[in-house]
Structures are given as C-alpha cells and as structure tokens.
Length: 163
Length: 164
Image (cartoon, rainbow over all chains, first blue to last red; front, top):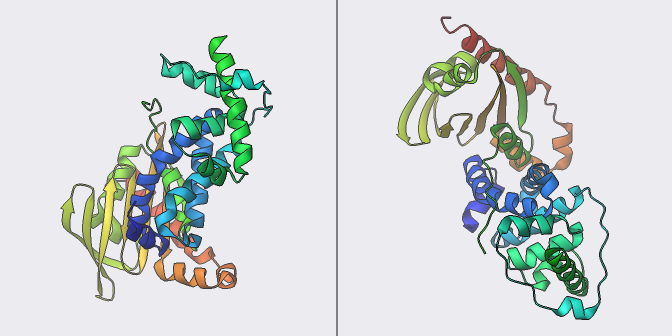
C-alpha cells in the first residue's frame, strides 16, 4: 500500500479514495467471509464504512493495513449473530496436530461451525498467517487470551473434522 | 493455502456510501428512476451533453483525454471560467474531481427501473470539517440536497424523454 496514496485519500482526494477502496475491499471482504460467514456482506460494508469514516484520524498511513484489519475483525465479530460458546477441551486433545485437509469447502464448513471468537483467532492464525501478538492487537484482547482461544479452537476444529 | 473465497465487486450504490463516509459534508441523494439502467446510464455517461443540461452552473464540457476508464474533462462555467476535472467512468460508476469539487454517480438496476445515487462535495469542506466539528454540525445541507435532487430529476427527464 502506497503511503502517499493513503495521505492523498486522507486529504479528500476522491480518486485516491476510489483506488484505496479497490485495494482494501478484497481483503476486507475476505476477512468478513471467514470470520462472519453468515453476515459477510453486511460486515464488509460496515467495516469499509468505518474504515473510510475513520481514515482522516489515522496517524500512521504506513500502518493502514494493521488498522484496517483491526477495524474489520472487530466489525465482523460484532455482527456475528450466533451464540458464542467456547468449547473447553483437555490439553492432550489440544496439542495433537491438525490433520491434512482435502476439501477447502469442508474446512470452511468446519470453521463456520466454530464459536465466533474461536473462529476469528483460528482464521487469523491459519488463513491470514498472523502472529498471536498481531491477533491480540486486531481483536483488542491480551495475547494470553489469544493463546487459550487458539488452543480451544484447534481442539474443537479437530473434533468436528474427525466426527 | 489457496483462498477459496472470491469477493464480488462492490455494488456501486454501496461504493458511493463508502466514498461519502470519507468526505465530510458530502451530499448524497438517491432517486428511483422509471427507466431501465441502460437508458439512465446513457445519459450520465454522456458527459459532454448531459452535464450542461443538469448542472446549472456549467456551460460547456469537453472530454480532452481518455485512457480506458480514466478521463480528463475540461469544464467551462457560465461565467467563462475553465476548470480541468479528472474522471473515472464505467457502467454504474462515474467519479469526477477538480481542485474544488467532487461529483459522483452510482447506479443499480431495479428490474426495469434504476436506482441512481448522486454525490456532490466541495473539497474545501473536507479541511474545514476536519478543523472544526462544530462548523460541520452548523452546516445546513438542505440547499445542496435540493440542488442534487433537482439534478436527479433532470437526469430522469432526459432518460425517460430522450428526444427532449
């Protein structure tokens, strides 16, 4: 992302805003589809509105992707409507490695059935490649919470996968 | 890992709302026009002929450069002053910008009718609003909204009565 384009957009250059939207929208929509599959379109539109409304207040244009990720993840989490009940599992189950996957559609189905808070950390870790610290920043939660949610999410995912 | 999610393009009306969110003071109005999308967009996209018909302050418009979706447009107002605008134009989306103003149109087919949204924004308003939220709150948008509504009505007339 070109910081000069971000600065131009912040100053009200509509064509820069239009280009920025083209660059950000696929990422925002993908994150929303992963984290809030049942409300992906609404979440993406709300997240993009929040991003563009808040753009003038962004102090570090070079950090725009981190900020966009955080706004998007929090918006998607807010719009997820299904009950969020985390599944507790024992450490032995959680430490086993995740099996290799054949069908992406099956993975998405399994992810969609996880509680939203677990789905979010697992998606951000395994599909988006974020570190636990980056996930903590995006979600606005302590790194220790990310670690424990990842532990439960992996175990819950594995149980679903093997069932 | 291969990404199985293929995001669709943003709907033009949604795109206009996002653009407006970044332009404090922008006026956006919509009108459901009783004409098919193609007829409405033919009017909007015909910049040289349509803009002087619906924009009261504009006398002449000339497209001076065109590279795919990107255009440069020379606009002469009724007082004879000229201003260059950069524009992006594709079916359902038209965005024009000069040093002082942003104008945009977005259209979506609604069966055999068309939802047309129109944005106007004075670029100086962005800086002013950023400097003072109070001045943004005291800004009365009604005259600008009435102007945009009037322009949408003219476009509807041009789309539904093309011989006029």
